[in-house]
Length: 201
Image 1 (cartoon, one colour):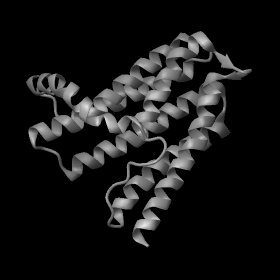
Image 2: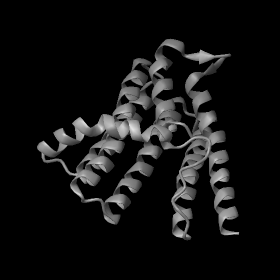
Image 3: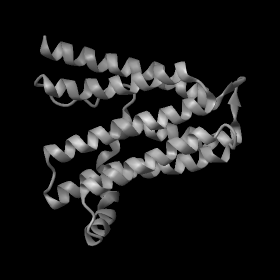
């Protein structure tokens, strides 16, 4: 996982946005909800992308905004001293629904339902193993080959270039993305399981 290692850099870049959010009276929970709504818009844009490829570019922009706000809500909560278990729960639930609508939009737009199912279960299992480790007494696990930040960046990048590239080796770029998410998602979940199992043993 590469992008989570850049979190300190992102936190410094977030400081002006935290200040603006405070002045605007926004709460971490409201930012989490806005981030989810952006993910929903991205999922819908991806669904439309097969018939009008420029919608993929719209979806990509919304994905990057979702990822940015996903960092901002936590930074704002820490700044305000309002970080709580309830806020963490809301953030994680909305993040999982965001993952679902993004992948569902990509898969449904191409009618790749089986591939979409494989991708979304891999993504959900990755996140589940991360928090389940905490539930059994370990630290929350963010390790593995591809985490959420990497995944969002990849979806955004592929969505952004899809209108201009279309296919690689005869395969739709979006199909290749779904296949990658399916394989790497389950691989990362198994990595996290192995780490947790070894730690408990």
